[in-house]
Length: 278
Image 1 (cartoon, rainbow, N blue to C red):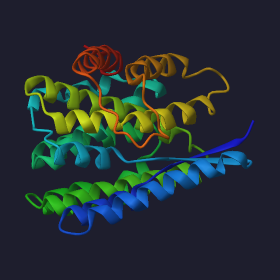
Image 2: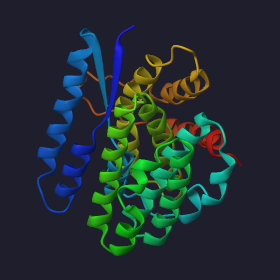
Image 3: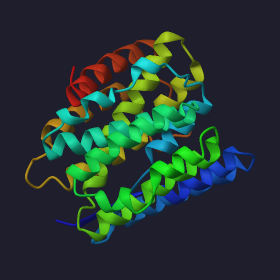
């Protein structure tokens, strides 16, 4: 079995938001493509590196394509004490991270602070207290109310700190499980917003996630020696079935049909409910 390293592209994320504030978007996209290509090249070595984006990066991409804010779509912070197993805590840490990103992108600062409080609770249960406590996140968020650019960098900083902590403490694989929860939640938000008002640009962004899903499935599979994540992998494969016809080597743009978007949304809702609870 090869050693698998999972990395979240936090540096690229920070650069991405800098570009969104007036820089060169094309340059950022090129940098991201290079990193993913390097990960593919390393497949033949003893250590395979998978590069996954941050929930914040995906939220920003969706937001730039019309991901409007619908408040009652996000997972309630009141449920945070319901997540007792490490598995549920990891997935819902990702869910709340996605919700926080969604709120930050839509200038919902108080909601962002509420989700930060939920993340702090879960971080304590996951023994990641040092990450949250050392950064003074609550004070930083409160001090930057109304400043979206600063809030973006604060969350990107949290992502990098968490990745470093997991790697230093031999829990690197946890990053892919947290990301799975965040990815499913962000896809769910995108699908539901699109249901409220069909948006071709948003559908295009959702369709592009086929390549991220493929990387995510591979990273979890190769760290699942004890079949701990078999149910999650089954659910991710269910989502992946809606991307039939996607060819990562093709130059043609892959866009989901209206029927595929509708069935994908239904499955995302079912799988997301399993994660967050009723």
